[in-house]
Length: 67
Image 1 (cartoon, rainbow, N blue to C red):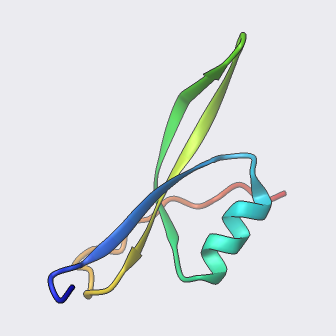
Image 2: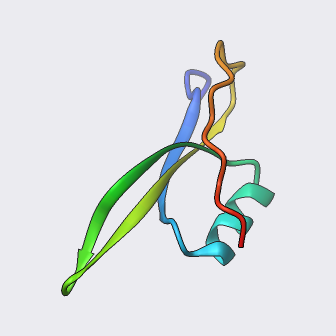
Image 3: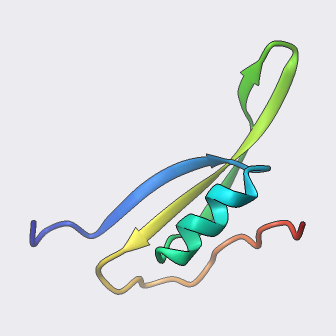
């Protein structure tokens, strides 16, 4: 797919194992969606992550919380 520019995924913000796996594969966070998921009475934030195949024109990416 020569026109594919990026893959985008979402991951629950406290799922450090998944975030570290995706980062090891080259994904990086580009946005945080607060209270994106509701499980019972609890809300969870999500990180939006992307893997770029073409050069980006910006470099604004959120920092992930340290565990």
